[in-house]
Amino acid sequence: MEFKHQSVLLEETIRNLRVKPDGTYVDGTLGGGGHSYAVCQQLSAKGSLIGIDQDEAAIKAAGERLKEFGENVTIIRSNYCNMKKELQKIGITSVDGIILDLGVSSYQLDNKERGFTYREDVPLDMRMDQRNPRTARDIVNTYSEKELYRIIRDYGEDKFAKNIAKHICLARQEKAIETTGELAEIIKHAIPMKMRAVGGHPAKRTFQAIRIELNQELDVLRDSLDEMIDLLNDGGRICIITFHSLEDRIVKTIFRRNENPCTCPPDFPVCVCGKKSKGKVITRKPILPGEEELENNSRSKSAKLRVFERVKE
Image 1 (tube, rainbow, N blue to C red):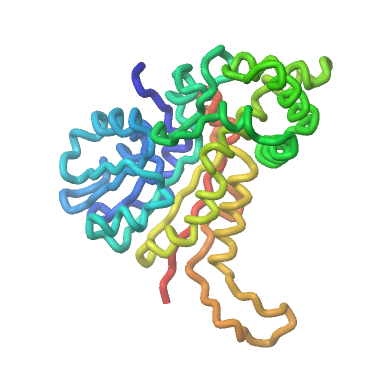
Image 2 (cartoon, rainbow, N blue to C red):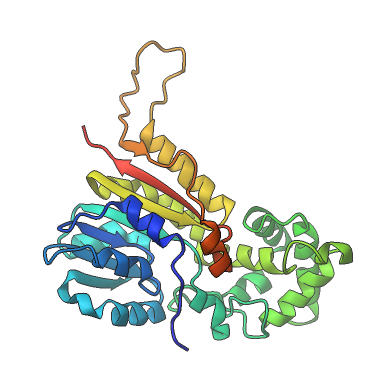
């Protein structure tokens, strides 16, 4: 299957990145290379782009798409949480801009073999990096009812989390849950009939929760944002596109903390904690897709872009 992914908020991201022709840029979630392609179009022969992705199919597709830019592009198979380490390996200690597009690619969703979809009946997988030995099947069949409830409640924000967790545990007593179709059916029966008709597919939130847990998406984001901000040169920017409230909240909180890290009590006349600002939040409110994009790409519906600029004293 061909790797396809429509880049969300493309123009807004590139505009806010403020690409310098001779600059060094990192796309930490390379995907099909849409954002990277737009960056490369603005680079001179001295500029460079480093693309990072953990998905082998993405690496291949982006490699093809960015081939015309030759040595300006370096592609690395890794998770963006290893960005600093991977850049050091190729002699880079600072960059002019970073992009993260945290959505699951259209390819991953549409390629049913990857087991992300609740619309087909395929083996439960959901790995963004297929080198990971653990799959969604392991989570569904080995997590306790309490653990399942926690992830569906916290990562899926599903008000029927308790009942869904209970139904999963009851079903697997009969036999192991092997496929997306089986899981979707169990979830459906855990949700009251009148609620199934509203708010999209009844399995959507639980599948999202399991995917986030399996790929440790929120931990990876939370643990690596500060380090990425430290990688930026003076005036360098990081642009992050999120697709649900949990990710957006993490980005918003960490950006604000880097802008104003002072931990002194508000009634102190002067700062004594010594923590210095690393820059400024460019987006007080997130940038959302316009009407045209919403019409052309339904998956952009929940996208939010936030931007932070590094300012060194």
